Length: 392
Image (cartoon, rainbow, N blue to C red; front, side, top):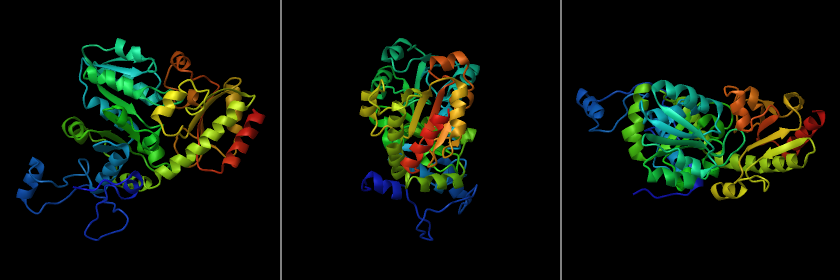
């Protein structure tokens, strides 16, 4: 039986498999296929009587190391890596849905997640109900006989709405519904939904996992049974597989994710506190501010407030753009979770796909600005933000 190591050890050594060359750093198996010693061995591997790699669309040694390490970090039994975070979201749903099924989802979602649920799933005859995820009674009220999935982000993109994971998962289990939690904003460092009863957790490896703006990737964490019986057959045959090189980048990035996310979170709360005091700021969204409506729940579920800060500048789109354009240190980008601090205008970028009425209902107004706080010196970040606010 393998010894259980603590988090910091698993981040460096979890899932490590060395080749016969005994390399120190994990190897990149940048190949599409594998060979067999005989026709009999090939038959046995394809039948499942013998373990072995067949094709990188199915599995790959480098990808497998990344999957095992992330599963250890997430607290899940198993993981399946995908080409992107959105491939993970879509795959986690479609592997278990069919025509006539029903999904209940929180309304507060990233634009592409909302598009999948609002535009794509109905084309397959799958019904979707959008609710206020913060209201636990809404989850109960919207359950039907054909409800198969509960889906939500916590914290949500971009206003950091927090949902009580344990309460929602308890309702789901009583009704034999699968709960999928998008844990991208918090990262597995600050929150482990599996501990609160979640069945499936999805990640964008492009965000905090890589955290350095280099590689696309995603992941679905679950039980071994869900992965083997439901998820793997769907993903193997539909093909949203991650490149071995990208998996290697994400694997190596996991070695430093804790150091990065904790330091970025320390910077983020200081920026949130600074913004809250500024006369040109209308409202600040950050889970660990005492003024945040769900402060107590955030403190219960997360170890820190996270790397993301959202705020509304006094004024409209004009003032928001003036602030963004006046920044000299923060880069304008729609990405997040990077070591470099980034600024986003959700209304015109990440959530543009939503209609104006939908955006308004979620608090995504033209004066809303989203900050992804990086690892720069905090005094430099504060200075840049203050100067930009003065110019706005």
